Length: 424
Image 1 (cartoon, helix red, strand yellow):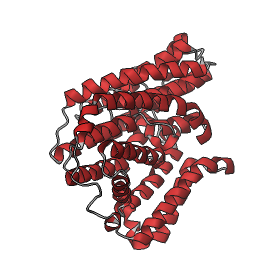
Image 2: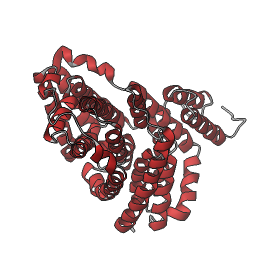
Image 3: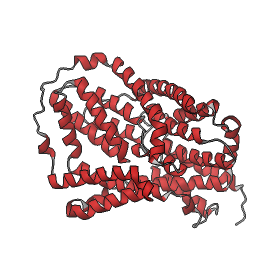
Image 4: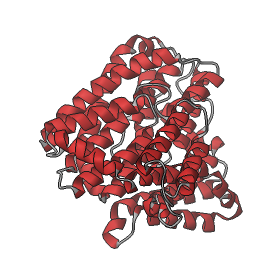
């Protein structure tokens, strides 16, 4: 069909309007993104056949599979069981509990692909333990939240790293090899600073007990299913590491693990398929199609050409620009649409002959580090702050932003130095 308005401008305006609707909270993510795709189809910018070309199907298979396994663990009391053991091992000492809760949260976050469920469950459990011990849970919650937000040491630790890994064609081992040093360097600096800032709070806590009055076994609903779900989760993690060497993608490994669990778990596990976050899956699919409209109309190629002028050699300047741009943008707006758009830009840069390899890692780190900037930077932040407030403990958004932006700048500066040392 003939266009009265340049299709490039239609694609740009649709993408920006959808972005603004999401940022300002005027429409739900799914509604806004679906509407944007509908406009691209009605205007003929994308055909019904073309729109599916821009969807990374393995990402959605991975999300569906891991969500089923994680929901099963959550439903059976796995996370509360772990948290009670942690409190007992630490003998309810606040600082030791904080470190042990943090280690458990990082281990779970590294492989779940569903950080919100894991983190919300851990936060709820930490708050229950804090109520029993008569201590303030907010230092625990904020410290773990700030740390987990920037913990992107594996592709499954958050959605942006997953999108980047699949789109860039990186293996699990390759991703970990490039990300562990900048990731844990930033975590080390953040933790040292956070504990120093809150040292008086932790030292001043006086818990009522040295051992929890609730036994861990009391929170387990079905021991047989718990061990079955734990075995499926462990096997899935092993599959993520070795699967690609045998021709299995991340998504196929997750789907096989979920299918085995659903079959062996029977009627208790089966209904959990309804707990999959279908809204997030549909939203990401539609956002990929919106970026596809920018790709088809040449907007992404133009952005790539502009970025090549300063970042095309993948040197220190390019790493710095992509890292800080990603970090600061992700500090104030949702990082998923930005990540999807930047993935297409980096692919276009590679097609034009740029050395974009270091920029993939700068993008991955930036989108993670920015999550600490404001309450609205990630959906996890919003959910956690609401849950804490619902239980009677307010976290002031302005105070969160002051502390969070300080951490964003600090960790981005440290990461910048590490990435330049690795790739420049």
